[in-house]
Image 1 (tube, rainbow, N blue to C red):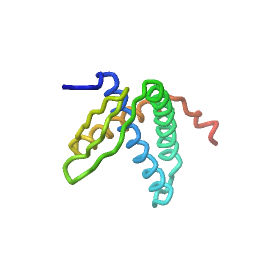
Image 2 (image 1 turned 180 degrees about the vertical axis):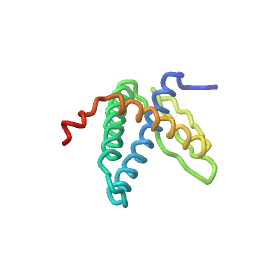
Image 3 (image 1 turned 90 degrees about the vertical axis):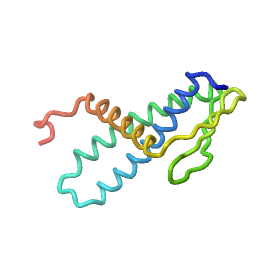
Length: 129
C-alpha cells in the first residue's frame, strides 16, 4: 500500500530527476568549455539557458517540498537499480528505479529544457556583428 499521495510522489520524482539533469548540464558545459570546439558560444548559450530554466523550476519545487514537508533521500545504487527514500508528512516510501529508466527520464527532461530554452528569443544576427 502506498503511504504517499500521487502528487507528493510526482513532485519528489520531478525534483530528483531535474536535479540529475542539472548535474548533467553542468558536466556538459564544462566539457564544451574545455573541448576542441571551434565555435563554443552557441552550444554554451543553449546549455546555460537550459541550466537556468532547470534551476528556476527546481527552486520552485524545493519551495513546494518545504511547504508540504516532502524530502528525497538517496539510499543506495548498484549496477541495476538506484534506491531513494521519499518522505512526506511523516510517511516514508522507498522507491527503486531501474538505472536505464533513470537515464531515459533525465534525457526526457533535457529535451523539455532544450525546447523551453529555445523558445526564448535570441538577438538577431545583425546585433551580434
